[in-house]
Image (cartoon, rainbow, N blue to C red; front, side):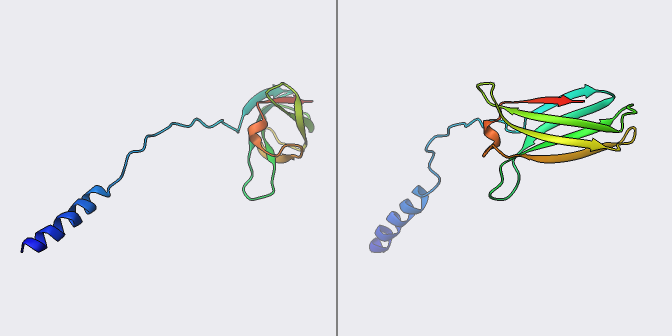
Length: 129
């Protein structure tokens, strides 16, 4: 009986000491990569943002949502410029929007070819006309 207790006690100590160990936590703040910009021009409301596409081998995508609020214009050219932290233009995405009815919203996307990661984008410039 004494031998049995001697062999069970180390086993119980080992079982109860193998629980989770707190090695400390460090909070990591991630940079928000999908920057959102808004613009009203010629009766159109434009939202532009970046998004990392799913899959491998892809760069950074420019996405736009365009709503025709009250424009009679049939065509709209939109240029989205990706700007880095040095305020340099690192890539450009172009869109040609045609035949959007009043109160209709459309979504388009294009790839920023010169950018390997959306994390390099600090700001977006929108030009439309």
